[in-house]
Image (cartoon, rainbow, N blue to C red; front, side):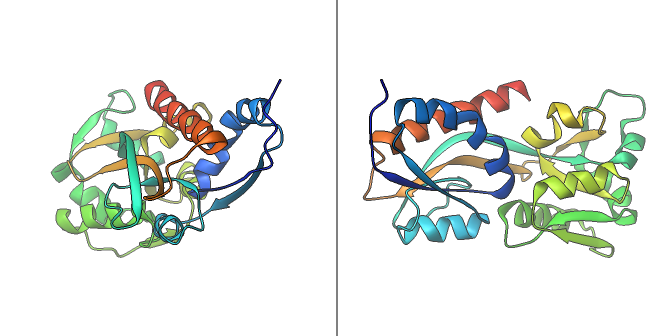
Length: 223
């Protein structure tokens, strides 16, 4: 029999992770905690961090361990950022999708392509722009998007190329999308769970945290 709990857990995650992770874990959680209420927020990484620090969120799935005062960050995995899109096929030159390409070989290619980028206030957007700046790529033709799903859908449609997390590009529904892994140390995101530093998760929040961590690791292994 499930444990009857009248608790409410305030959970935050980036938009596309609310679509992928939460449906995977909630049946298990509700079987054990049938009385649980869940308030789910799809937010940018900076808003997730602010929400945890202000104790408006009990738990957040987010990027980067630079959480700062008032936030405990538990790193789960490092996730690589990939370059995906129809025209990426030219970079593969007959190799299998997912081949590794040195960053410097991409400069001319990226300079001529339309770039579909996450907005800079999101961690993915900041990481990508930092990489492009270091590579010397000038942002001329850019589409700024606030969610990973339309980013890769636009790339699939041939609108341009995009930088997306490994766990997104390698999902089965995007099995035909060409992508390359870029040989560059900065195209990495730390993924983990964050909570208020003085409020260690317990009860259903702890169960939810453990289930989310397990699914994040599982998705990484599948990818």
